Image (tube, rainbow, N blue to C red; front, side):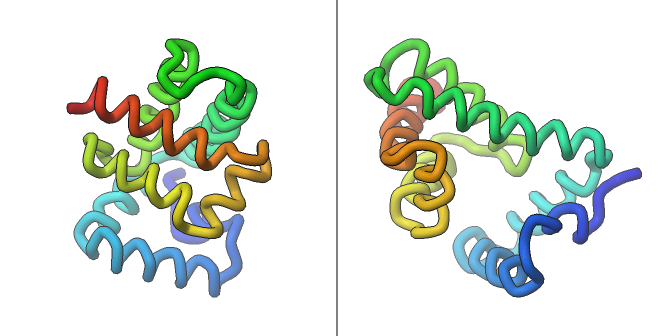
Length: 138
C-alpha cells in the first residue's frame, strides 16, 4: 500500500498539517509542494517508516558530533547522509539546501525540533549544511 495524507501527517494535528502545507506553499510554491507530495505518496508504508527512522538516526548522529567543527570530515559525512535523507522529500540542490539550513535557525519550530536533540544543534546543522552545499553541491 502506498501512503495517503493521513499517513504523511499523522504526527500533526489537522491545524498543524494545514499550517505547514500553507507555509510550504507560500515558501516554495504549489508546484514544488505537489511534486514533494507525489514523491512521498509513491512510498509504501514500510518505506515511509524507514525514511522517518533515518531522519531520527541522522539527527542523533549529528548531535553526537557537535564537539567537531562543521567542516570536519565526519560531520560532513553525516551531513551528506542528511542531504540524502532530505532528497526523499524533494530535490535539494545548493540553493534549496542552503534555504533549508536557514529555516533551521530562523523558524522557531524547526529550531525547537532540532535543539530538543541537543541545545545548539540547529545552529550546528546550519553551519555544516552551508559547508556541504558550498563544497559538494555547487
